[in-house]
Length: 156
Image (tube, rainbow, N blue to C red; front, top):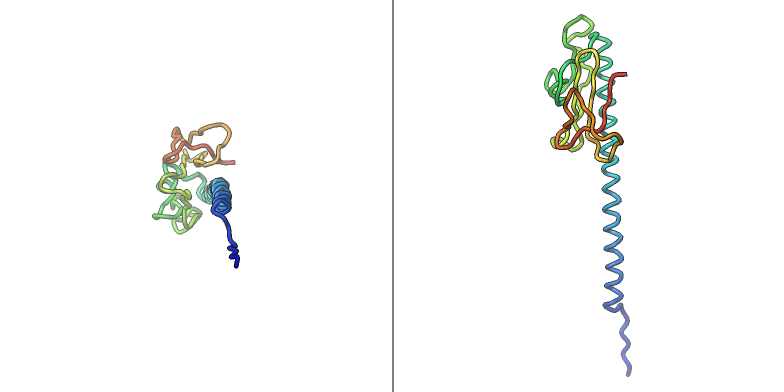
């Protein structure tokens, strides 16, 4: 009587496992780029949200919020929100222009930088994927946390 065993050989199993390992390795690198791109998109959206709130603030208060540094410490007038200064009746301190100031997706390692002299303003961020032009300056500083700022939004 002849016995016949069916199954995979050790070589066949090693080849399949190697192929699966290579595919997983390639997909991890591909997903990293997608994550960076998504965080950069969030940063641009956050800066546009801040810019919109600052423009509405200016239309009521006749100037941009003054200051320089981390956007949260400069713009937050009641801990976490951008409110009116109370300088004029249209700029009442009860007016909320931005209820929660957004933070960088990888905060506290990175943050948004804000600078304004009351007449113009700059908001900067450090994008993960390369931006043309190298680093940018916001009020003389080029550091957006652990990385240099390389994206800037200014008043229109």
